[in-house]
Image (tube, rainbow, N blue to C red; front, side):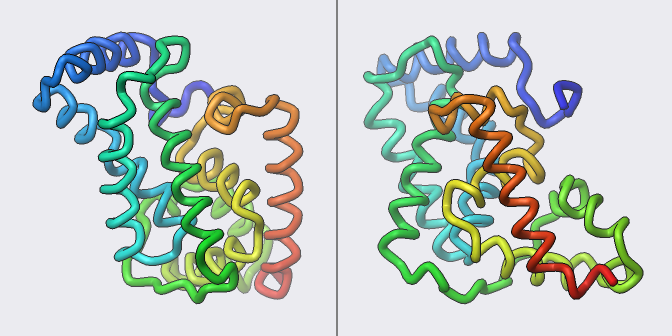
Length: 201
């Protein structure tokens, strides 16, 4: 999946580093540029895990504020987007722990990335019932199934299938091995297949 256009390439990371250095000196314009670059991706991750637009908007703002305050602890070994993703993931998992894990998804926003998600392509090719669904109907079924996964399993599905991140990058975000990422992804796909079985007949 290294050729996925959603995945950042090295020159962009170096540019990120320049903006981070400026931000660390108090340059708010530089940080605003980082926010502009990554806001939609962070929001997409948070929304897919939190389930509602209102919660996702609040959490995304909280994440970027927290990152701004923590810039002094940024280590260059990890790219900025790996670092900000880790903050976003931890904030969202903590939020979910404070809430009912079976919270009803409020589909007040449609995620356009679902059209290119690996899960959508995989499931839509398997059965006539699912192929006849609209994207909105599919997302409703998929979100309901995703909420039955643990936070870590849901996160790997969103980062890999929807946002196109490579196993190695997800491993850096989650601070685990690539093998663990693959294992979580395999398990998550199996659970999703079981949950959506009745729609792929």
